[in-house]
Image 1 (tube, rainbow, N blue to C red):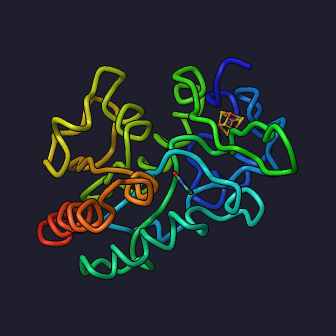
Image 2: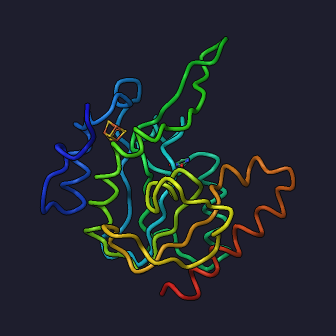
Amino acid sequence: AVGAEEFVPSRAGLPGLRKAAHDCRGCPLYQDATDTVFGEGPSDASVVLVGEQPGDREDREGHPFVGPAGRLLDRALEEAGIDREAVYITNAVKHFKWKPAPRGKRRIHQTPSRTEVVACRPWLLAELDVIEPEVVVVLGATAAKSVMGPSFTLTKHRGERLEPPEGIAGQAIVPTVHPSAVLRAPDRDEAYEAFVTDLRAVAAKGH
Ligand code: URA
Ligand code: SF4
C-alpha cells in the first residue's frame, strides 16, 4: 500500500471517483472499516467542508457527518446561514480508523497518522479538482494539515482566509476547529459561538 494515487481514475466525475474509492487499498485502513465513506454534495458547490475521517456512525451508515459531530455541524451551518444541501462535505481520510475498547464492543476513534493522511490525499485533491470551490473549509488539524501541509498550525490561523497551496483547486482556504472539538470543549457554548463565527465569515464572502 503506497497511497491512493493508483486507484484514482483520471478525468472522472464525482460518481466515478466515489465508485472507485470503494476499491481503494492505498493504506491499511480499509481492512478494519466497513466501507469507504466518500464525500457527498453537488459538484458545483461553492463551499467544500473537509473533516478528519468518518466516525463510528459514519462508518456504519456510509455517509459523512451523520453522527454527533454531524448534528452539531448541521446546527452551526444553519446558524451561520450556510445551506448544508448546497455544500460538499468530505473527509481528509475516507476510512474509519479505530481500536476496540478494552471491554465491550465499542470502537474507539483513533487519529489517522500522517502517512495515512498523505495516502488518502489523492481522493481529496480529485474531489477538489472536480468541484473547484470558492472556499475550502478545513475542520480541525488533520484536515488543515492535509490541505495546507504538515507544519500548518490551526490555532494561529483559524477563521482566516488563506491562499490555497500549489495543487489545491479552490480559491481560498478557511481553517476552523473540528465540530468534535466543540463537543469536547470545557466551555462548549463559547467554543460553539467561535465555530459559528468562523463559519459566518465563509457565508459572507463565499457566495
Ligand atoms: N468526524 C469527521 O471528521 N468526519 C465525519 O464524517 C464524522 C465525524
Ligand atoms: Fe484508500 Fe484512504 Fe481508505 Fe486508505 S483510508 S484505503 S487511502 S480510501
